[in-house]
Length: 122
Image (cartoon, rainbow, N blue to C red):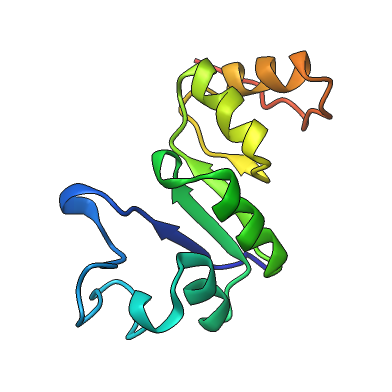
């Protein structure tokens, strides 16, 4: 079974949460940030198990809150090695990246278990 992943971004024109809008967002299936107080609580209320947040919206506190609610937390799209280190330090469960080779390098540097590599054939 493939779980539904709840993708969020809370900045600029792409904001799909609408935390500052009393009517909420067309992207949140009627759930309003104001009624829940956080994105992880909205996802939990929707029955979700996986939150994929834009990496610049994440903080260690938000990651801890989500995990305490039983959610897995993914950071997207993290392509810079320094930022990969930051989100790993926050305790995310996974990273979405255009540069999985760099994510693997950082994981290896930290002594983390590496998933099986996927060969790339041009």
